[in-house]
Length: 420
Image 1: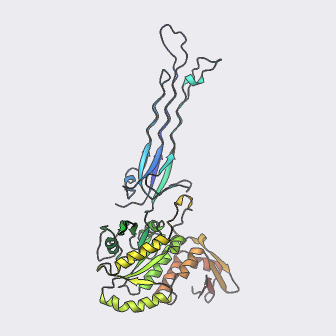
Image 2: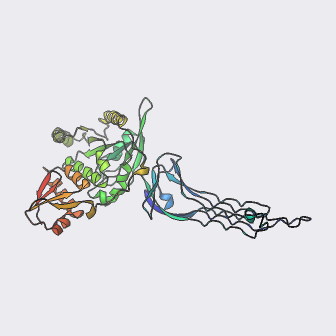
Image 3: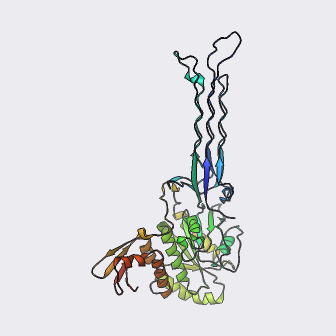
């Protein structure tokens, strides 16, 4: 089972107690203190390993603890330190403190290590407390207590290119054609239930890592169909292949829907370079519709290409374009300083303001971007946007502000007539 987010409780090791002991040796009266220090408790360390691709190992072990330090001994012997607990995680794991929400680290490269909970210091033995005025101290320290911390581990795949689209658009087929990956492929929606990775190799030795993201549906930004879990995996990509199903009633609606969901989840996703591709051009019906669809997309400033992933038509040209765009786009930086992303817009994410007697302005960057990505000449696209307004609370906020039927509501440069 694929698991890309998990909470785990980790506890560091307790420090060993310092010893109270005095030297006992024949013919050596008052040998003096020789109690040793306790050993240090083990740290809890996260280490990124490329052999892992999921956080499933933590599913049945939600609480783990490092070893305690051993107590000090006579003869000024220091106790053994507790072994560190090294937890292997996939490359791309982000670590947050559950209590504070702070981002502790981003294990974005193989071999990255992060100490998330330090072990307790070992207590000092009585030999460390001897002074000229107190040469036989009966004093030592106990080891420092262990520390417990709750962590949220969140996996974001490390890939150069993300393949996105609605269910059954042909994303897995395209991944299998461009790379040597063998994802599950079927002629029904939601065949892919977890992201798949593949390596696109070129003749000169260059390569790019591609990720096939499971199909996204309306409401994905808020978790519908596990969409929020899937969207986070394309946050690290340089560019996106937006694959449109040529057999859809109107592929433009699908493209607008996916773009709106990305904008609502993270505005940066909608800013990534996109290569728009219409799939299934080998089907006569799609081939017949393609010229009109191409013109309609171009009218909205979208340059699209047509391919058949199944028949491998146009896939080599697509691979060359992917490489060209990827080389011109720098990779994203590690997310150590990234803010915590909101997964579901709330009433606080936008504001309703009065503009004139019967005019209202709704402000909010994610909402304004979703409006900018909506096809207003398509009725179904407008209806989707209307459902979005109800889902995130805009309609309730307008009612509370005093909006009446017939009032004007403005979002960005768009204006609507309010009908309750």
